[in-house]
Amino acid sequence: MFEYDASTTYVGSYTGGVLFRFNPQTRSAKKLIELRDVYNQSRPIAWAYAGNRVVAGTIPEYGHTGGALAFLNPANDADIKVVSGPVPGQSVLGLVGEGDIVYGTTGIKGGYGAPDDTKPAHVFAWDVKAGETSLETGTDGRGGDQQSNTCSWRTLCEHE
Image (tube, rainbow, N blue to C red; front, side, top):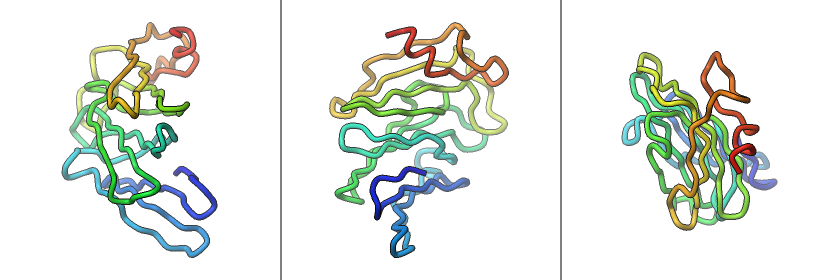
């Protein structure tokens, strides 16, 4: 869930990876996109704001690997871009935005029943305006969660 302003909160549902715009003042919701069928995503778990876009990071559908980034335009509900696999084979578990860059952390686990990625968890930086990764680096496990093989923000700071 991501509060954009007093009248707009973005919500993601599991299952189906459905993204909604919710107005808490009127208690109304508008379905924006379902990520399951086209993008094989089921769990919007991370949210940020960067490059004048609300960004959702996802975990894939059962049996699939590789998360996605969904870019939502608060000024135009129809202007949605989805990027599959910003770090191939890994789920997007954490996001934070600064200017035009959204920084992310990943995990090696995909959807239930999918094989774990063999590469270590990553940190990445996605340039929203350019539409590409400006930083991607694997971790050595320091600062991460050994049990779930995720990457922490401490690891990102150590690489900058």
